[in-house]
Length: 205
Image 1: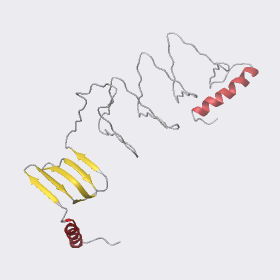
Image 2 (image 1 turned 120 degrees about the vertical axis):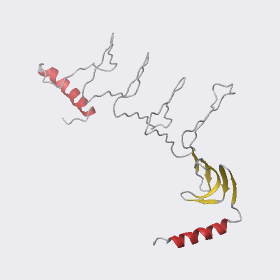
Image 3 (image 1 turned 90 degrees about the horizontal axis):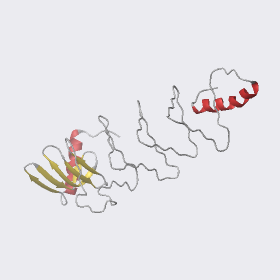
Image 4 (image 1 turned 45 degrees about the vertical axis):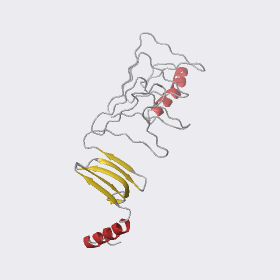
């Protein structure tokens, strides 16, 4: 497909605007404009636009998109008169699709009296990934799973004032990757355990 020349593009815009002219609305005031049924560069026909002279505003498009733009910050405040502590003062609900919250040049902070992260699908995952450190600090930490693995490709330190190790269906096994100075029967029992541990670390044996 050949690209339109500037003259052809202007002519096409003129024809489209003429088709939309009966529905087009614009109200211009010092500091802001209100428009509807106008053509935008990226999202097609706009249903409703409120824009300021500083290029801030709210836009709704016929395709179903919406955009809110502020040059510095946006603050949403609700719930001042809410008497029911179990109700939601602010809700973000994606009927389909995903929700993305980004702060690529700063910190992303979730803070509340109680914080919950819940994956509702039967095969849903919760992933926390960090390029440097992952820290947890609480008076009590509980981890429970049908299968739980803790692996470290370098050092693993476990310290406690007191420690209990309990295995309900089998022996508690300890093994080292160093050459063991043990009897043949014990080595035979430990070797499979070492192989399983190395597989968890994705180290070839």
